[in-house]
Length: 483
Image (tube, rainbow, N blue to C red; front, side, top):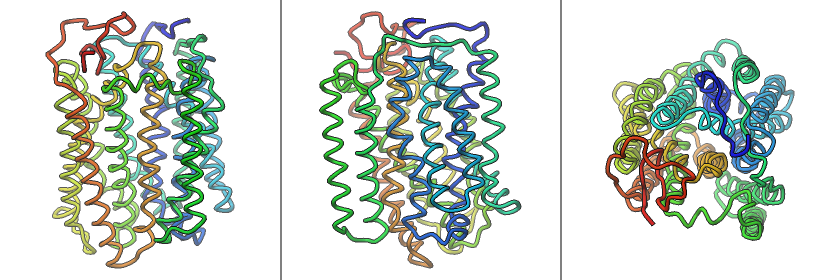
């Protein structure tokens, strides 16, 4: 349907399909963390190679999410959801059977491509199926389910690594993919906007090359501790490709994969800068905490997964509540307070040492960080969707997801200096990373404070996207920064 808005008889099926499909990406992004030591030992990999097990997935996911959303606009969001989910499932099977590290890395890249197709279209389909407060609640449930799946995945993955072997962590993607595809085929109505015109293949290539060059250079630097000629050359190439990307996007104007005019809105720009900082800081925690617990504190993979348990509990409980609360009060306060609470949890993580006493050191830190993310996740997701006109919703969701993954990509690329250490040096490096992450989380809070203005509670119904209003919308139904 032109305009990208359709209605199916019961939108709850769309919610279920969107949750199952997007959970693939969330689960895979976190379950790997408890398996990294086992994968490293299995392939006798060094620190840089371990980083690429993560980044081979994050790189295409970050670079192609925008194109995935644009392809969904053009060819059909349900179709791209199904295709991306199927590709992700096939790549997961190859990961499980990979005979070498190189095969695993290629399959991880294919997983990233599949996730780039399914993620933006799952949220765009969800956005088309609900309105008003129901949309805010649905986004809250979607965010909570995805975050909870990502957080509980290390527990499941830890048990599998302990009892079956690390390849088995990729098999858990198969039933999720099958369920998502079945629900989408049977119950989800197609939604598309053939006039969107953002199939920007040149921009996608340049974005991928830019992120690839920069990531490769940063990974080389962080794993060796020095800037070699190759690392500097890769970073410079990444910068040049990024300049080319902006040049192409500027020339394509509204048909660009990333229309640069959207960044004139301080709300949209602020929300995405906040996303980059918050998810970059939190991504470092999600990678390092299980790794340190297993490598230095003597935890088994399943014990490391159990240590992350406060995350799914608090995110599942808190995200829907915060989504509805932000609908009524505006996003300014939760998006300012949430990152500060996350940063406080990171500072509490400085008490974690080689003894790894759970209740005294690990539990308080994880609980406070989980509470902070529960405050911020749903309001942030809903605010991004509401910050643009209806015709840009799929692009905005794709871009924000790309920014979140980019934060994790950069964080992982910089963590080689920690992953390469052993013994007490690993704990020291971990503490340094937590301090840096807390500073970045505080910066995310500052961005939210200065770029978003608090607003009055909305009138029922609120402003409508695409209505021609001159207000910038910061979340469904409430104004952000009047122009």
